[in-house]
Amino acid sequence: KNEVEQSPQNLTAQEGEFITINCSYSVGISALHWLQQHPGGGIVSLFMLSSGKKKHGRLIATINIQEKHSSLHITASHPRDSAVYICAVRYNYGGSQGNLIFGKGTKLSVKP
Amino acid sequence: EPEVTQTPSHQVTQMGQEVILRCVPISNHLYFYWYRQILGQKVEFLVSFYNNEISEKSEIFDDQFSVERPDGSNFTLKIRSTKLEDSAMYFCASSENADYNEQFFGPGTRLTVL
Image 1 (cartoon, rainbow over the protein chains, first blue to last red):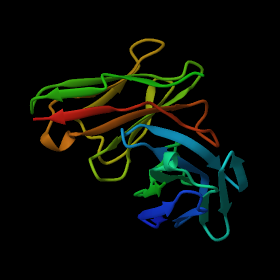
Image 2 (tube, rainbow over the protein chains, first blue to last red; image 1 turned 45 degrees about the vertical axis):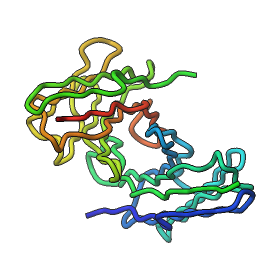
Image 3 (cartoon, chains in turn purple, red; image 1 turned 180 degrees about the vertical axis):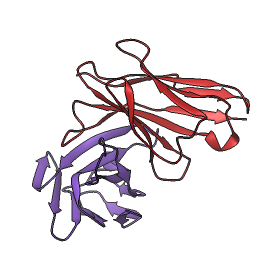
């Protein structure tokens, strides 16, 4: 069964700290998504990657296809970054029409 | 900025009742998805829909579930006879294309089955 593993499960940081969340997957993928889920439950798409690196504001996402690994970095973290960060992948298997397989999420809490 | 909308935000129903969850995807998107998240668990894929038919469905999406695009804008998920274990947050998502395209999620509908 294809799984998506995230680490750590929980992360507490002080405001201003550099944060890294990791995601690994088992077989070839066509795309990897980083999502943010707020306490109210809503999901926001942060990045979609198939190779390399993307940056948006204080967020940076990288992916290493050979190692089947992706990281999400947050620079100069702020309490408003507190949320659950979810990695989701679309595996390369025949007939798939884009459905995503999700990790369990990393719960980030940034203290002032 | 265009967004996916879902109604209602919270639905409470009695076990055995039928519920219909509604979604309005982004207007130029062609692929539509339903996901669910049981409280405290990870998000799970239910079904994908393209060109007025189901493209793929998971083991969760059994005969109790159905999807429909009744008109040009709405995309619905129907649960025929709800069970306690159907209580979850249900998310609709849409994308322009299946491959290499970002999926945009709606705010979710929290379904509570009593």
